[in-house]
Length: 150
Image (cartoon, rainbow, N blue to C red; front, side, top):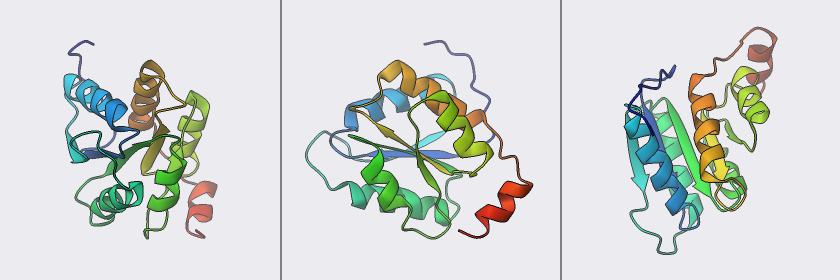
């Protein structure tokens, strides 16, 4: 890891996980801190068993209330976190598993949360996905019309 600043399009980011995603959450958080990205950790603070919907809801409400611009959720598959987060008004959480799905989630869907699966995505790829998510702009246009229908 280098101390080169990561230029993101967001001012504030937050991160949360469940017990299955705890180790990867900590790695992503430390990686972003090393890149001078401001990140707020919602928890948990250890790998003891927790319920992922609780952490997805906390993080999503932080974004809904505009205390953070964007979020990162990590659980075993990413799916449970995304389903839970998407229950909150104005949240668009996307499970991302490769660079193309990540780019498209931002360009076409204006996703404001990336959900990662710690059992499906290794650390190195997760770093690339998070960087891509934080750097990719929403294209607007016809995509905005569709998002307004959600």
